[in-house]
Length: 70
Ligand SMILES: [Zn+2]
Image (cartoon, rainbow, N blue to C red; front, side, top):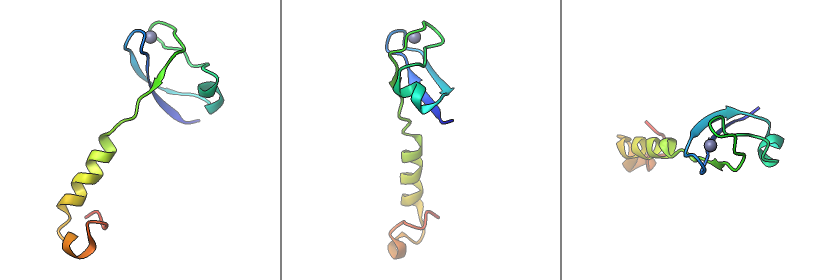
């Protein structure tokens, strides 16, 4: 089962939960704080920032264009 990073717009609670995709699609996941099932998916930007940083720091980027991620 996949993990979901979810945020409850009702009470502002953010939480990580493992649930079936069918549960997510059918709004069967409830906020553990207030019980609401109207939840937003949180898209973490951490991975995007890290990959961009390593690209800038690539010592061979004049050769490889930063694609080697070293
Ligand atoms: Zn809530």
